[in-house]
Amino acid sequence: MTKTSTWRRNAGVLLILGSASGTALAEIIDIGWDANGRFERTTTVAPGKFAEVCGPLRKGKAIEWAFDADAALDFNIHYHQGKKVVFPAKQDAVVKRNGKLAVKRDQDYCWMWTNKSSSDVALRLTLKQ
Image (cartoon, rainbow, N blue to C red; front, side, top):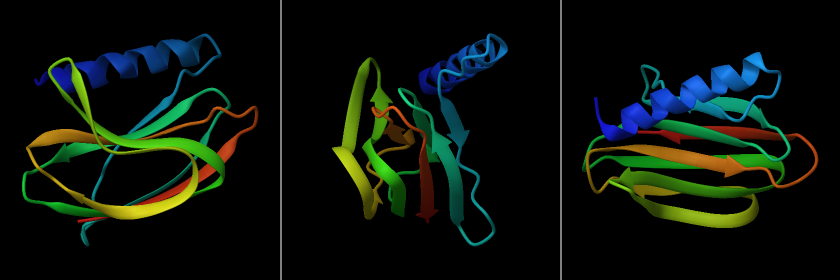
């Protein structure tokens, strides 16, 4: 198991514990590619919380991505390299973006949105291999 996998497993435990106490900390979603190499998800990011979509990607892949939200969210694409967090993309207070991620190394990559507002924000994401 990689360090990233261990971190994600531990984060999942925190989510379960948070849900049991009535306060979910965040939503971490595993990428599940369909037969056409697409992943689509619609979710809600609660006030003060985050949503994160993560999965293993192989060096040399190119992932087209697009999202739109009902209000501004802080957004990034990241991966962990030891204790360092690397950000291939990062932007604060965005409602809609798209791009292409050129995968530089075999790694678990995450698309992440943080809601700094006081209201729920609906988010729609599409990834294509």
